[in-house]
Length: 114
Image 1 (cartoon, rainbow, N blue to C red):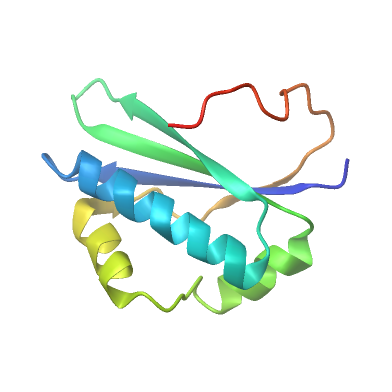
Image 2 (image 1 turned 90 degrees about the vertical axis):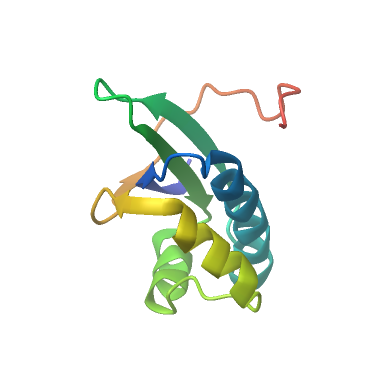
């Protein structure tokens, strides 16, 4: 396989879920264009304390591509999008978890793109 994955976790401020999702989608598009990521999936979870968390699973062609983007701060040319993203989160789950994909049984396109 060889694909490289980075996972991120964010706790969202109450009432900022849609703002976060919108900024995340736009930021992901910009990162894909600028740094060559393969895109990302966003997962929503409600914790036992009712706080909303999102987990992003970003795929990259290889670790070197991800590292270049990470070292650049995943910076892109839309400060308003970045500001909206940061305004919506109240905590991040620490450093991203980095993994190499060894087996992939997900369908490439299963028709869900919301």
